[in-house]
Amino acid sequence: MTARLKFANIPEAYKNVRKDSIKNVYQKPESKKAMVAICTAIKYWLEHFDEMFEKGKGLYLYSGTKGSGKTMFAAYIANELIYEKKKTVKFATSVQIINEIKSTWNRDSDTSTNQLLDDLIKAEILIIDDFGTEKAKDWISEAFYSIINGRYSDMKITIFTSNMSIGNLDYDKRITNRIMERNYIIPFPEESVRELIAQGNNEELKNIIK
Image 1 (cartoon, rainbow, N blue to C red):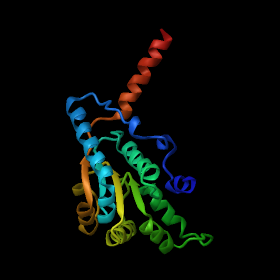
Image 2 (tube, rainbow, N blue to C red; image 1 turned 90 degrees about the vertical axis):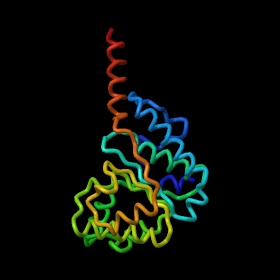
Image 3 (spheres, one colour; image 1 turned 60 degrees about the vertical axis):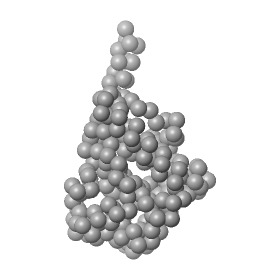
Image 4 (spheres, rainbow, N blue to C red; image 1 turned 120 degrees about the horizontal axis):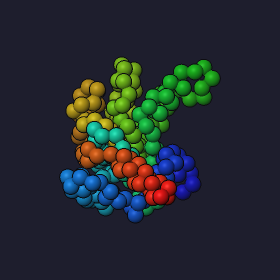
């Protein structure tokens, strides 16, 4: 278990996120309704995980609003897969992946670019957080195509979070079509959970001062 948790590299703030951590804190009625649908969809995916695993069916969680809860849900899913399904998960932002690739260009690097890409392709389950925030330069597009196509061919689950719908990603159809085919697309509310938490913190501080 310790090895799986270390490999996962889940951000510290989300390492303990489990089912009981998920609360419907949205304020807008449409956001509350959307949250119910999101929880239902993810619950179904987890309950039918063996089927999803066999078919390589992942998830694409997106919202144009930053802080809408996508990363928290991705971490919750990762923890469920690690603790309940005994799976090995690799969690990384798209920028982290790009930076890891760049680090292989150094002469002193112990890992080649091809080795790194191969590790990402072979990861049992890969979560790419904040996908699409990077500038899709040619070499970046080719790197992500290698990863996504490799996993697509090997029927491996990839989970994405993004601030963009698939149609708005700055990538060509080689990538977007593979994501659409192999992922359930789940839109998140256009409402920031972080802002709501910040408002609550400010109210708490005001009460303390009083």
